[in-house]
Amino acid sequence: MASGPTWALLRGPLGRPRDRASILVTHHLEEIPVTATHAALLRAGTAVAAGPIEVVLTDEHVSACFDIPVSVSSVQGRWHGQADRAPASG
Image (cartoon, rainbow, N blue to C red; front, side, top):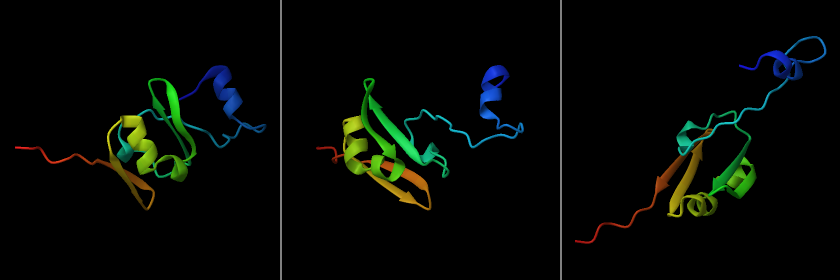
């Protein structure tokens, strides 16, 4: 929770909270809250993709970020990523 000068910036002219942004850092798409509207994918400190969440969280972008094939899906705002691993040879 913000305090001091930071909290003052987050409050409107009558002292009411404004809409706030939050930043979540995760490797797990399942942890993304349904309220998320935007996302950024970073690989080695470089942005792979950034923008509206539906545009960013695609198979192509997430696969490039993790450097493995990943299938991404969303159901009612809940995101899921599944690594597409080849079967082990034996």
